[in-house]
Length: 85
Image (tube, rainbow, N blue to C red; front, side):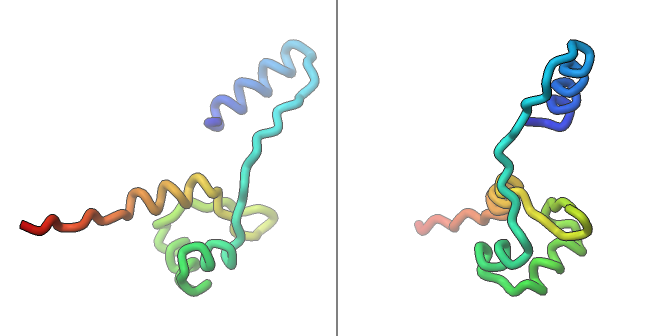
């Protein structure tokens, strides 16, 4: 769900005195988790962050990565094989 969708939902809930029950299932990864998934060093993860090559969140000062963002990053950085003739 896009942030605008969340904002719209919250605004609608407040205006109509509805209880807020929005609870998206978001899976967040730590830098260690991401390093293990990508099979790179933790320093490599921080390089990706420093260069803003992968989306991230800051939660109470700690880095977190949304699994959907990681999948998108992998897809965007996929290199197709060269066909043999």
